[in-house]
Length: 297
Image 1 (tube, helix red, strand yellow):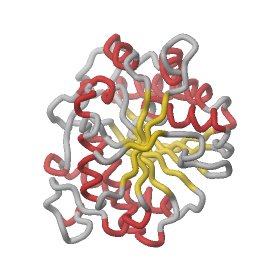
Image 2 (cartoon, rainbow, N blue to C red):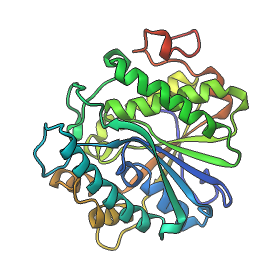
Image 3 (cartoon, rainbow, N blue to C red):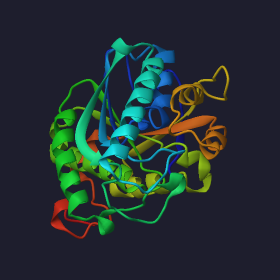
Image 4 (cartoon, rainbow, N blue to C red):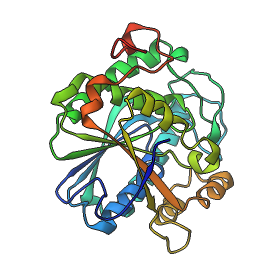
């Protein structure tokens, strides 16, 4: 990992008037992945526009205290409705009120896609990369690239994307689609990509905190800049983000999540130099044309 820049109000990579776009895999990733950044931006007075959150995989059968393994439409619909409701309440709290944010659902289906099997990661999700993609994941990847391309052309815009700590296949898919869209935009891109950490998987596995950073930094010719910020303190928990999560996200709450989030004291963000967008290298697990970027590996 390269040298970490101590985060301050002066070097926070967003300024008043900037637009904020969140490219997240699931509903709860707005708070778990992007929440500490958003709370810090509010504390610094730079989040002055209406934030837009775009959820890629909106439907799920995962409920921490519900029978797992069923993929009936009834279960998916019931759990998805509960997740949307709690995320709406959580985002109202996160952004101060319902008029400060909007959510778009990109239309991808299950999270991860129905029937996908992979090694279990922290949190119980399925791990994966390009080597494990089925036609369904490839289709999702290509659709997401087209969805994200317009975001790259937005002036005065910050795009937050999870760095995919924990190697969840749906998080990986979203991250790689963002990178592909940035590559296609190249020198015409105007938006600034910032990678944020996946929680609670980062706090659960601190020894692996910089694994994905190191890979991406190598693929972008040392184009990532690391900033470390102290989390805004909470009233009931160690952090404000944890307060909001505990208050609203009931389908996701487990003691493991609770214990891991208690370990969070600071968060890292990684800004990607826009001059590097045009020369991003493909992931080493990519062996097919659909995921190829520049000619080198």
